[in-house]
Length: 298
Ligand SMILES: Cc1cc2nc3c(=O)[nH]c(=O)nc-3n(C[C@H](O)[C@H](O)[C@H](O)COP(=O)(O)O)c2cc1C
Image (spheres, protein in one colour):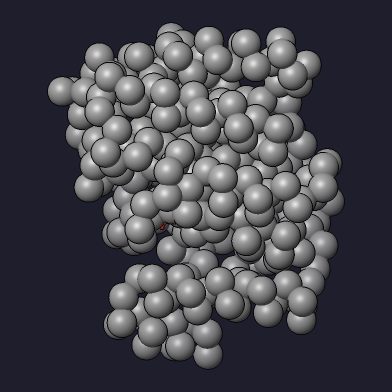
C-alpha cells in the first residue's frame, strides 16, 4: 500500500515523495514503535550504535524527524547538510537548525551525525571558514560531524580544479577538531563523505587517510542497478582503508540483503535515503530482523 502511494506521489517529484515518507515516519513512530534487537549493538568511532542502519543526510535536513527515528529501528541519523546561511530549497541555515537541535536532551537515544557544507556563494578562498563555523556551533549537539565535500549545483571539492581548496578545508577542519577537543573537553569524530560517482576519488581517499579523519562515508550507486558496482568498490576501498578507518556505505541500498552484503563487504555502518522513500518507515525493522537472524545463525 505504502509503495504504491509513494510511486504515485513520486510522479510529482522527489520532494513530494520525501514529504510523504516523512509524514509516514512520524505516524509509524507513534502507531507501531519497536525496540531494536539487542544483538545489533556495536561500537564504531568510540560511539555506541544500537544498530548499523542510519538515515542518510538530506532526508532530515533540519533535525525535525530525529526524535521519531529510534523507535523505527534506525541505529543513527545524519542531519543536514547544514550550511552557514539559509539558501532557498537547500537549508534554513545554521541558526535555525541549532534552535531545533537544542531541544534534544543528551545523551541521545541514537548517535546524531551532523553533515556540514558550504554556501554556494562562498568564494573558494573562504570555503574552509564555512566548515569551521558549522563545526564550532554544532560541536556540542553532534555525536559525529560529516564533511560533505560539495553540492552538484555549486562548488564541488571532489573536482581536481578545487584541490587546493579541498586541502585547505581538510587541514583547517582537522586542526579545528583538535582545538575544539581541548577547549570543550569532549571529542567528536569527523568523517568525510566521498561520492564515488564523481570521477576518480583515489586521491581523495588518500587525503582522508593522511589527515587521519575518524571515518569515511562512501557514497555512490544511487540507482538500483548500480548496487553491484557499489559493492565491488566498497570491497576494494575497504581492503585499502578499513584497517585504518571505519567505512559507512550509502547508495543503492533497498533491501535487507543489500545491507547484509555491504556489511560483509567491509562497511561498519550503512545509510539509506531512497529505500525509505520507496518502501516506507517499516523497512528499517525488516532490515534489523534480517540482520539479527543472520547474527544469531553465525
Ligand atoms: C533529495 C536528496 C537530497 C540530498 N541531500 C543531501 C545532503 O544535503 N547532504 C548529503 O551529504 N547527501 C545528500 N543526499 C545524498 C544521500 O545522503 C545519499 O547519499 C544518496 O541519496 C544515495 O543513497 P540512496 O540510494 O539510499 O538514496 C541527498 C539525496 C537526495 C535524493
